Picture 1 (cartoon, rainbow, N blue to C red):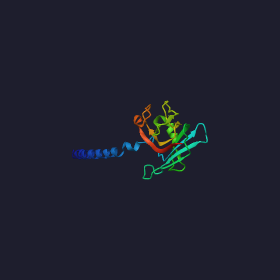
Picture 2: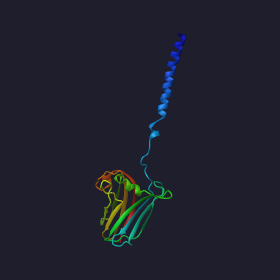
Picture 3: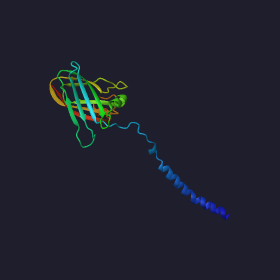
Picture 4: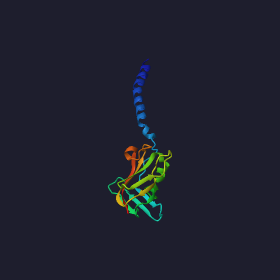
Length: 193
């Protein structure tokens, strides 16, 4: 009998010890170990907007913003080559690049592949400029990688280009109405001559 009491006593003291070990084991294996990032946000260092005059293919204007340090302290480097003519129609195409790696990565391909999760928005302070998105996502909603720019009178203003991730679709073509998160935003001086 004495042996049995000792065994029971040993089991009673072992049960809390085993419970603690089991608890430690369960908490050390968290769900964090099984988390997989399915769509990690891409770094966009460069935004290029190319406008080609539909009546004169030699009249090409390139707006380019390069911000290699991303959200770092350095301002983006903006370059604009070419001249936007008054009373003209331009075919526009935007590209998003990651030039912090070699070779650079064209993020535009991902934007197009995941078109239902992206939309490009354009706003301008020039009242005599009409921008129309000419491409659509997989559900038939505007995407904005391809556009038509219709210029009017001579003038100067600002053009803001924003790539939104997971906007509400369809929307009212405004950033407020679209919601979502901004993947890239650039501002250019837009001069019509």
